[in-house]
Image (cartoon, helix red, strand yellow):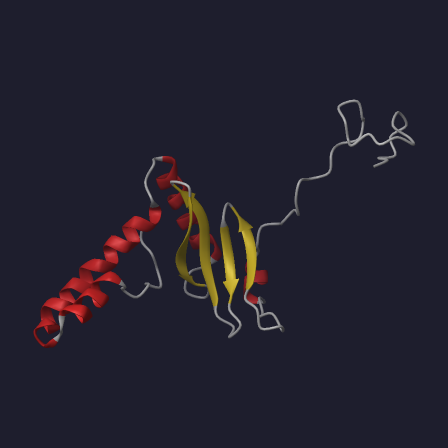
Length: 156
């Protein structure tokens, strides 16, 4: 690839160390989201969900139905995971960034930020089973405790 540098003209330099021109960026450059961009986020006309990145793993997920949810992608112990922070009008951009930073601190300390959310969910589910468990069979009790509904706002 000819970069146009006077020392590399006509040869395949591949952006070597000798080239005076800087290397191109590795991937697409995304600017951080603004509040106006979050307000104006519309669903994709093709019916696919849109993911608008903000940086540091935080993204605004726009569902085909028009819902806007804050999500954060991260890796813990070699597995890719996703953490939800809530819906956009309820959780503002600055709040979502603060929650992302809090989750990043937990990752830096070696803790899984999603584990706190899961633990917070099982408590209310067990209370529901205790109050209504008399008429439930064991399979239903296991389903209620094992697969609780996701909350709208995760506290880390």
